[in-house]
Image (cartoon, rainbow, N blue to C red; front, top):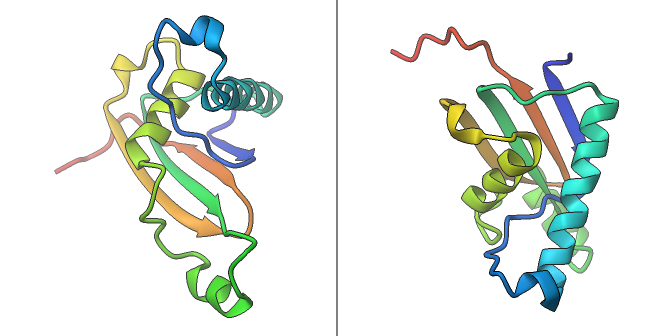
Length: 130
């Protein structure tokens, strides 16, 4: 079992779903289910199991439409627009855990990068939080 997991692909937040999504097949919900499948495949290949304490970085891809100067300015900086960090974290937990009530410590950030990815590192459960 590895302590670090790197998912290549753009992170997808958890959408608000209703019972109607069973037959309506909204594009955002379809995108979310595809994302979950891809994460699970990559996690199994990397032999990764999400722990109860972890650090996660969501790297959001820079838009192709912005200038090279703007790209250089944003690269590695905080991503402070939608999608919301909490919905992305919810998506990750729901994908990699059967029951996420045991999670007790998460360090989470969202930043700009060349391409989308998620980097997760399990932390020791004997953290000194004082």
